[in-house]
Amino acid sequence: MYKLVLSDLDETLIVNHRVPEFNQKAVQKAREKGVKFVVCTGRSQMMIDDILRDLSTYDQKEEYSICFNGGLVMENKNKRILHFHPLDYKKAEIIHREGIRRGLCIILFTIDHCFLIHPIESEIQRKIAQKAAYTIIEDDDFTRFKDKKIAKILLVKDDMDYLKQLRDEVAPLVEGVELSFSSNRYMECTSEGVNKGEGLRWLADYLHIDIKDTIAIGDNYNDVTMLECAGIGACVSSSNDDIKAISDYICQHDYGDGAVKEVLEKFI
Image 1: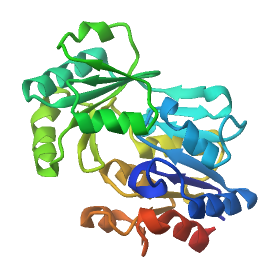
Image 2 (image 1 turned 90 degrees about the horizontal axis):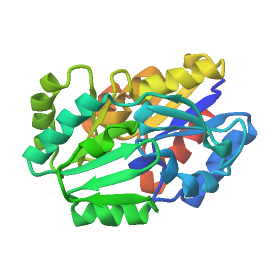
Image 3 (image 1 turned 60 degrees about the horizontal axis):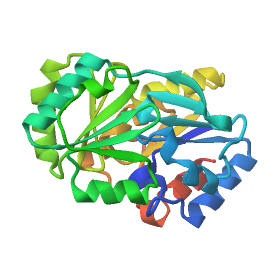
Image 4 (image 1 turned 90 degrees about the vertical axis):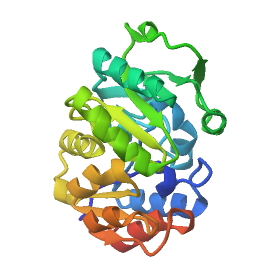
């Protein structure tokens, strides 16, 4: 019996930054069967309150969330941090430098705040829609982050071919940093060993759940590790072909019309 389900948020569980009613009802039925339903997202723990409210797990004991692509695991009650793996300052500085050199919008997350560096308007509007606390930075001084716990950095470009080339150029400069992609516009940079698969393994071990009794649902490249790690890895119908190739189950539905609901009804 499956005991733990992890779901990505953007382009998987949510529509317009909230959980649609059909997914809410499916998650509730799964929880009534004793299944833990956990969001596993690149977002910070400060940006998911409304989503957890939709799932009835907000501020609840023995309910959990995985944020920053696996870099942070928390119990939802009082946002109690169980595990956090920050990004090395020196490597973060190099990533920032490479983004600045290319004229890119950069999004930097500390453990409790979001910074938009040379932002583009679409990212400002996205943070407003996400109800995220953010600060805009227009200069290139990275020393302001010297004493902060950096969770991850995003380099933004609405061009996956460009981002894949960027990864190949940046990777040798920051050996060991995890580089992945999400939402077809972000290159996500996290500490070595930080990915959604490791987040899944950490939480399953913490809850004493066998990894074969887990399900992961996602859509994009930063979901690959958890799709491969879980007992069943399921992707939404609009996923790229290489995501489908590593998935155990390909949904007939897309995120907007019930992919998560489909997976829960089929396997739970």
